[in-house]
Amino acid sequence: MKKLIIILVFIVLWAGWLIGFPYYLMWLEGISLFTTLPDFTSVHFHFPDDVFRYAGSFILQFYKNPAAAAAIHTAFPMLCILCWWAIVKRLFKDPDSLLWIVFLPLPAILYFLENDMDLGKSCMVVALSATLAAVAAVVSLFVKNKISLPDFMHKTWLSIAVPAVCTVLSLVFIYTGPIITHYDELAELEYLARKQKWDKVLEKVPPKEAKANLFKRKYALLALSETGRLADDAFRYSLSGPDDFYFQKPVSPLTFNYNMLFYQHLGMENPLIMLAYQQETLSMTGLSFGAARTMADAYIRLKDYDLAKKYIDILSHSTCHHRWVRERLPQLEAIRDVEPEYPQVGPRFIMQDFFVNMASMVSRYPEDRKIADYLLCGVLSQKDGYKFYETFSIIAEEQYPDGKGLPRLYQEALCPISKHVDGLLLKYHIDDEVWEKFVDFNDLMNSGKSHIAKRRYADTYWAYVFF
Image (cartoon, rainbow, N blue to C red; front, side, top):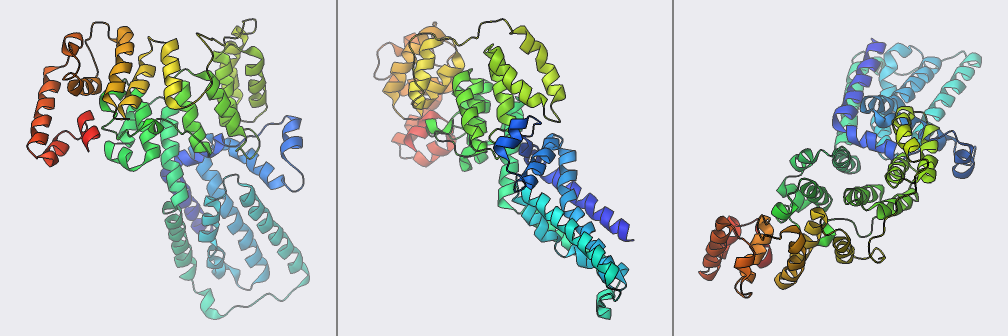
């Protein structure tokens, strides 16, 4: 009976972690690091003070698999329960009916575990519980009289009801925890973006979610860019300024990871590497698996053999990266004698604000529509139609030389400008449907029916400008 109860509680908690927070658990692996290289322990850990953080770093390697991660996360409180059960058996009379006592702290342990991202404190609690169990075993050898408890504490139903209630309370604490719920949602978006499952990202972040949550909006806009829809649907997903595209001042692993994805998909390796180095400073171990993998792949793309080999060597001395390393060894060997590619097209520029960066990149790579869309949509978000037209006229010479095939938002922005720029409608083609909507929007606004115009054309550039 006792074994069955413990097994059932383990299965329920394991399923709770696996079903509810698989992406958060996998994300924990990416912010940690473990390697057997000697400088890892000598520089980042001071023994014996950091022995539990060191153990946590080792354990977090296995969190790449969500099922294994959920099992390990569940094992921490269950190991504590087994140690406490050993204490009860050693010190109390008739212990078989007192199983319920050891489940009482379970909700507190789960709440504690939720906020322990490096697992150091959790390892310490398990070690302390094991130590107390060992002490109880020694004490029981010398103390023959075991502790008696009142009869009502030996009721059979308590051993069923209390574990059940404590397990339910534990799940409630986990599922209502604002930190872990928030992290799992964003970790899922990060996972989908790394796998380039952009349609899934947009399924997870519908327009209403993008409007309500700035972090999710960034992922939605990134997905729109990668699917070629940014210049059609940016304002439908509540673009309100260039800061919606990336974090100007990242301060957490989540924000650094997003910015790295942003620059990676723009092909801007230097800011990607800079951000990876900065992210290292936030890591508990001075480096993280996520940053190390990012830099190894970036240096392979740049054909920098020495630096790529450095990070691959670090990862080769971890426990769970042997396959990952094997997959990259042929790529590494292929660039052994190749000159690193650090291209510089045109004059140097230092990373500054969004418009300076994107304008510089457009000048270097005028054929890259993705970069051009970021710049043009950023200008549109400033509600400056003439600045947009000035910028668009330059970009269109490369992107739309025949004036056709313009994305919807560019057409909408050109409609009101066409009244003031002679020959604009001859130079750039506006779809009949777009022009008819523009005329209807103007008619509604001029007749005092702005509320209808706002509702009918909510995702248009005109609605963004006026409302």
